[in-house]
Image (cartoon, rainbow, N blue to C red; front, side, top):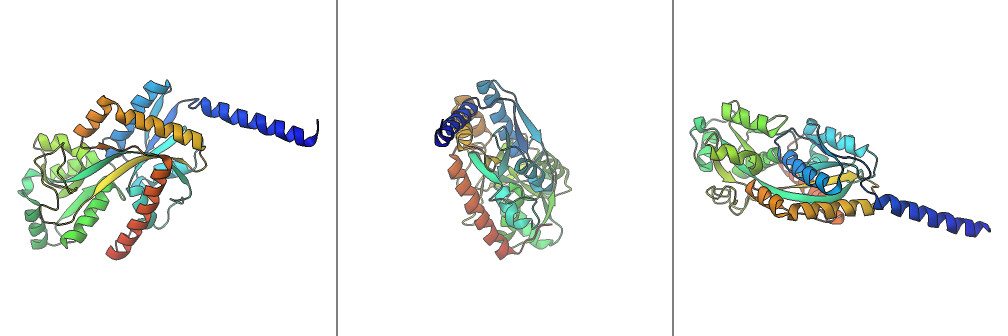
Length: 321
């Protein structure tokens, strides 16, 4: 057999091997890394996806919470993982925010990851403890201006959606409220209820039960329109900050160089899951809007938001640690 014939045969066998490997995906249990603690928006979505993915594929799907450092710990673990699709991370738009906010990331936000699919959009809701005796956003802003330096807001961590929303609120309202990060949204909410912090922009998913049980008072939602899960709560624009609109996207990333066929298989699975009637109903009840995408579309979203937040950070002058 000639050398050229041997090369052709090798290429054919290699191609067949790759195709076979892709057809067998997933070949072992999967893992979804979460950069925040249990009860956060990322954690809630990860568990929704994991259960349905495991049922459909017959492989275990582990949700691995690795909170801390603004979700950098979980993202760094993914960047170093084998690029075969069996390990993913679920991130929010804070992943794009961190690219400029945190100056010494142990990875390249645009080079070390590959989009799989967005999962859902979740708005934030501004909540305070009943003991604060504030019932509208205007009353909160007036109270902050009357007592400068005495108010702070909590979040699920640096670079979380709650943190970004709080910084946007500072800018829009013309105030300076100190950010106090916690390791999880439940911890941030508990400290808000207890009064050690004055307010938090919680994901609707995490706050809706506490609002309905009257443990927290909802002052406004971060979107232009009202949210079905909290229909009585006015949007920020109606509450006194015209033009304010913030919704956090959440999505799955794989390591860079993950095969396209594997990314596409995962994206199709995410789209299938969020379209299931029971999944869709549960997400909507939690204030989340299902939002599947192609890997390419998610890559574009991340790239555009890295640029958008770089501009915001330059204008506001906020700095990371």
